[in-house]
Image (tube, rainbow, N blue to C red):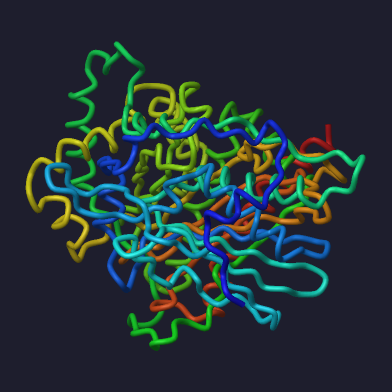
Length: 481
């Protein structure tokens, strides 16, 4: 079916007063890209596109017209997702209007499986950074959102999806039923999306010395990629027979067990999951006969830099990256490894060090060709990526009525939310974590050039088994007491 043009959707949508958008100033666009966005655009080769995926499973009969109207309204609230990148003389790369844009929705009425959408490249120089696919099934409908990482980070993507569901809920709720509510957004805040410190503030004493020490430590500890049982192969032109991600869902009891264990050891649940990810890497490498105790393994962990001043900002990148590098043999001493993970993450997240990666990008872009050379270097930058979005409901700006702890949007209910970060060259796995309706959701994407579907499932199972054992151990201790 033909896609209506975006300007029509605002006229067709009737929203509550909470859906207000404080309009952008006339001079907001073209809007120059910030350092992190330029980095996401530079690290975007055809074989490893800088695209991440979020899928939602909905129960109920999705109304096509209402859903299209909701997407159109949400795009007006999040303007970077309906802009493309152009070169503007004197300003460099900028976000600018996409002439006569089509609504980026593909309808799939066949109910077939979703196969590797993350392998599909999105060219933001010639189109917008969002693709949506609706795949009807029984009894659920899956809606898959593909975002180019230059346009937004994962939390921004969640904000957008929450707004889509909230507008849809307002359009389809029965008279008298409770409907979702939307917060006011201020697109003009996008001008400050590259700012790091609060106004008048700056880095504290010793910050630049810590940058030097961290960079030198990373340079001397080159990470090894996850072992691959086979030589990398070229994918067929139509992509891979992989699903977008491999999912493991853990009930509330497992998550409670992890929280108890974390509290007892005075760490966070995320620290425990980082520990188990290092353990999974070691376990898999052993299975492949490539156990090298002195090898370095590195996890890249995205860090949101959002502050209270960003509360009304539309979807965008306000992100930095934390790298944790440990030897494989450190897994043999779990207590020491866990405490070292906690000390490092606590120091970074709670201080100026969380700005380091993004701040450094602002400097290295001043050296022509340096960033491009770094991202194209044929070396392993990290062994794995581990992203944790936390509680899904808290990441939605909209407020939803709940049924059995799940968000209700008019005539549909959000049953599950899945996602996968973008894998990179020699960074062969990416794991995304989240909490929804009390359950822990784990989604893993594996490089289909290096692993068969069976091997990818085995890696996901290794991580899942470690999580279960960690939680069961604490549950058993609690029961014994």
